[in-house]
Image (cartoon, rainbow, N blue to C red; front, side):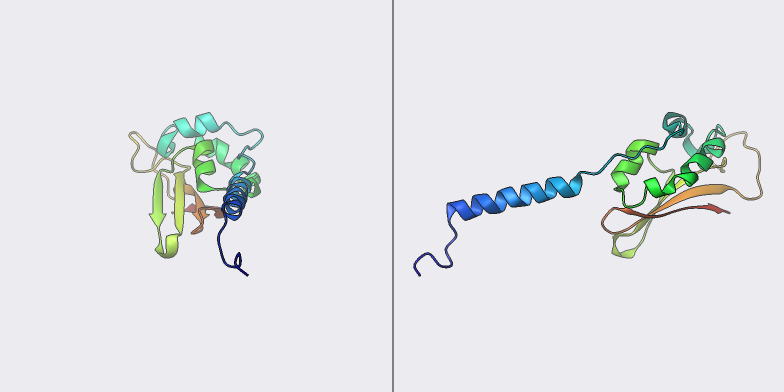
Length: 135
């Protein structure tokens, strides 16, 4: 019973290897990619001031399941930083991408309902809901 309860060098190595392998498997997931979507045009159209996002949003909505359970970093890598972010208690957040030109744009056409695409992100940083809203 002299070895019972003692931490050996071999058990520490095994624990470290197991932890690293688990982290590697958890962090690996397929990158976000939507067929037929021009993500470079989306990124370049900040706040939808150039009206390119209004044409592109339908493709994203048709493939919204591609974003489900992806990390928020993967989303931003693919379609850029959000135009706005909302932060809630318990680590939840919503990323907002303007679809129609908002008040931030010069020479915009005034629309009755300005649309935005929203991604709700849980406390673990994973996307759990994708939807569009008009205000």
